[in-house]
Length: 261
Length: 354
Image (cartoon, rainbow over all chains, first blue to last red; front, side, top):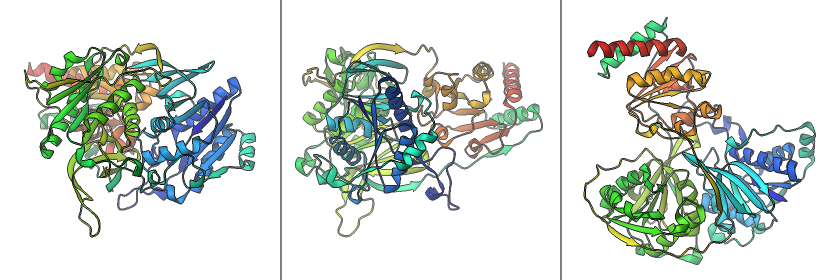
């Protein structure tokens, strides 16, 4: 079985968010990590590999430094890494990104494509389903469990108040939730392999059946009119009461002031 | 984009909303989208159309009319009984290709965030995800020499970078202008009893292929709790509660406040509470009158889902917890002592009044 996992290098917005003195986001000070949902997707692929002996290829689109997440994936157990990078691909929205990745995937054999549900920088959850649409294969998003039975994949698909158990014929694209599993750590041997591994680099010319007018910033139907750092509601009062009684008296006092009670 | 599929933008008219239904019951987001859609339609001097997709759902059209739909397009077919990506995407994409809406709004639910991207790719237009503000305006926002400024564009505002930044997006050269909209953000209108909409039925034909996945099982979460998005008071607990059992103290506080218990993602990840009680970026957006954040550190993803609450009360033993940056009243202390004492005090206040 051949599995391709699409991963993205993202700034770590969780916990380690850093601000400049003027309140804007200090991206330089934030770590670049493998997107969490993608990492769960990779782990799911590696478990299928452990079980059935699959070949796992990781693919990313980004700046040359995005090769770091491919090496991390190889250190976890992936077999091959492909970096899609080209200046003409910069500034892509989800349409142009999914068009690009689909163009790269057309060069590969796959039974299963796994992406994360969404990346923590954009949070759109669009690229996975859009890749499937461009490739004309079924998509199952929000996967919380993945099983293989013959040429079929059985997936638990999460909804707001329920889940569906879905069966699809491969090839198929699945978007993974980080709840899917606990990703493994890199192994010392894996890190050694990852350092030595050759990363395949593809540019615009390597994309199959893709029109220039659908790539990069100019090929993106959505345009940014304005971007700004979010103005947050300021902090109110913070008190450090000496006892629980003082704390309660404080809250009750405020509630009375506000006519809540 | 799409030099091969030049669109005649003038042909695209009207505001359409996807009227999500589950188990033949209209989801709250459909009414919220109608409320917003009506407002946008008024600015554009056009009408708002609800697209109702399902099996034996025609009877729901009147309800959509009461919440502001001028017209309801019904796509009714046995293949559409339970949500699946392919038949629903085929239904909605076919409606878009036939009726050519200027604007297409979809809820940013677990269904809409699957349907929206698939349909937008199929009809070759842009899609802006998880919008919190929708307005009609010019693009570019300010006139620039040598750049055509388009009027009456849908300006879609959304948070990004985990809620750290906000961006306003336009889709000037493609139609429809598509957005998914966060549940709980837009306001529904006061329903107009007896209102009627023009109802049109349309069936593009459904021929199953490999993209029609098979549903082997539907497992509903057993939950008799109130939807946290409708609650006036939310008593929300985080990892600081320490255990599932300890949520009892929050339930007691919720009861005396006439509220409901909700939680942070950490609590769901630990298996203490079900997913439908989760507030935040990957959970629900809530805006109650009072939000208690108890034992919640206040990760940006959590804050994104509750910062619009009218009044935020935070209790946390960690003085540097970021939740205090958004709290109106922040109390540094031991929740295990403060919460039961607060419940008792509020009970006493209530008793004294009666």
